[in-house]
Length: 377
Image 1 (cartoon, one colour):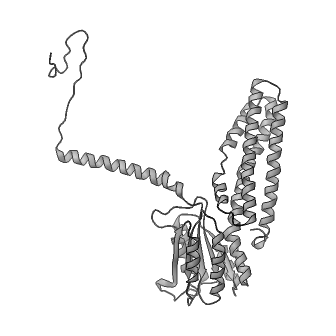
Image 2: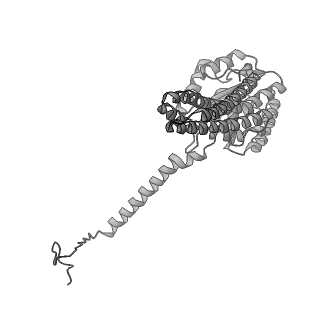
Image 3: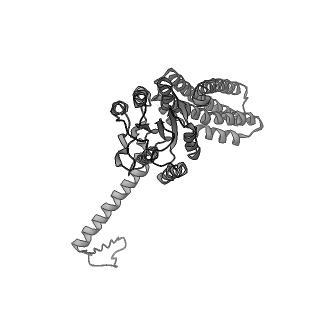
């Protein structure tokens, strides 16, 4: 029987009925709904990309080299930069900007190379073409260098945004009001909405105190002063190549050491049946990830110190994994009520190996840090 017209009526003992209703919409409405649906899908995909996918490709470091092109020994500055930049991190996103010119002109600071990875040779070549400027437009150079970090859709660094300033002047030639200059720079940094670290290298600076005052107002590390091309090169090499190695290496120690210390305390409590402490400590230890730091160190093998610390960081991570494995076995044995002598000995050996490597790595970091500017790095 044809029951397509029998809405709400069932005939027979074993019957099923499906009633389908069609609402006929005008073509213009259908097109609008399709456009809206596509728009929602595109917007959702874009949100996912911006929120999660694109940041995966963000650099670990973003560094701007800001060099003083005003009157003075510009050749030594550019020579130091071209020598040092080749040993910077492979994963760093770097840019080059110069300052120096007439007050109030648009070209008294110029971005010579934009941010990018793998552009070390481009930066070296651009540094050789920097032309001598008239006046040290320090304020505008710093302000525009900060702006370079915040164009639309730019990727923030995973760890550090920084500006390395090499200047032969302790003040801005266009504005004698130091407090105003300092306030302008602070406001620009705050408006950028991100943390930017500054490293100032004063080369043959006559008025050192004014540059010290600027770093104090910016709440950043005190400037490093040099008076010869050789010392300038050493200082620039320190901040470009060694300081990031120290930072990533120290971060590995800071992340992994507390997890092993907690495991040591937790495993001791297993004798009293405190399984909860061991489980909590194991969970924290498994969550301690230093992959970004070691990836950063993998790209900084331009010196023997960098290679040594990278290798030590990898060993420390491997030894921490061995401690976790031994703690797991010890916890399983404790839960079963069996004797803990053997698994406890295995754990103790793994923990001792880790602690020995951690102490050695800390000593190496302390020794290397002492060689930095001011003896602290």
